[in-house]
Amino acid sequence: MSPKLNLQTTIAGIDFRNPILNAAGVWCQSTAELDTLLTSSAGGAVTKSATVKSRLGNATPRLKSLPLGSINSMGLPNYGFQYYLDYVTKQQATDQHNLILSIAGLSVADNLTMLRQIQSSDYTGLVELNLSCPNVAGKSQVGYDFAAVADLLATIFTFFDGKLGLKLPPYFDLHQFDELSAILNQYPLAYINAINSIGNGLIVDPLTESVVIKPKGGFGGIGGNYVKPTALANVRAFRLRLNPTIKIIGTGGISSGQDVFEHILCGADLVQIGTALGTEGPAIFERVTNELSDLMAAKGYQNLADFRGKLKTL
Ligand code: RRO
Image 1 (cartoon, rainbow, N blue to C red):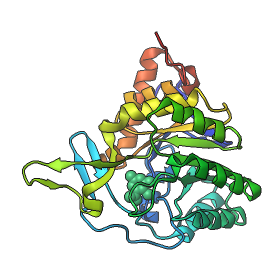
Image 2: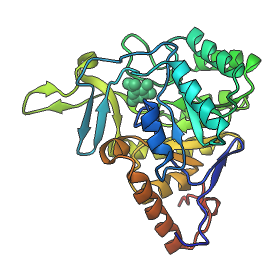
Image 3: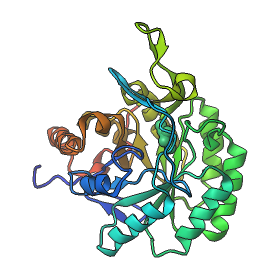
Image 4: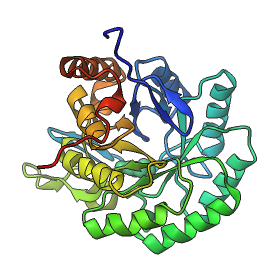
């Protein structure tokens, strides 16, 4: 990396030496995996979305890698909230702050329970409330119910004063961005993360005439190249509408430095890699960081702020 290049980025006062993290769910279920991320070239790490109690998740096969991406219906396999809270608190005590604690309660009450526990704990870092898991049978994605999101935020901010981000599902109608942004702008959110997988897609294997994953009759979240245009559109649409104090994490379809560049051009402050991290492993962070650096150097950019959000329109 050229000595002049600076990939540093900040969310709610938390510094990241570069803007490229794992996406929640990939390479982050165990502390061993999280340790590997933190010793890789990643800018930081997000933990597997936690539920109050540990879960084994859905029946297998529940993840399939595809030429253009992936489909998953993991069903929130995780070691339980306390496991991840202990991990990020321990890291914080050693001055490692570039972490995000992800939570995904199975109910409003569960989310409030976990947030109250965080509020009364020593952990003061970033927290990501996942409102968009598509894969728990019988549970719909809260992020599509704007009245429920409004109610939840109103309750959360009566007691929570930490650094809160929201993981959102993809939206497809401009009216949805208007309506949700008007709600989110009422609260001191640290960031939003756009997007989770595109929920309830279906991949068909014509040879076997079968679905490719077992849970929910084959329906699952789509990630990878399939979702990049939707992810970019969500980052851009929210950046045009949200208060500048609410930062944006861009997730979806990132497997190269150019993909990171495009997300940042649309307004992302940080980005996360899911599907491609799953197939390539943590070595991807060094490759993608180098590609981003080379692209910035070729364009004469020295900082991410030189091009963040500066997408041109005709
Ligand atoms: O565990 C999952 O099935 C899962 C989650 Br919590 C999520 O937020 N997004 C996704 O694609 N899978």
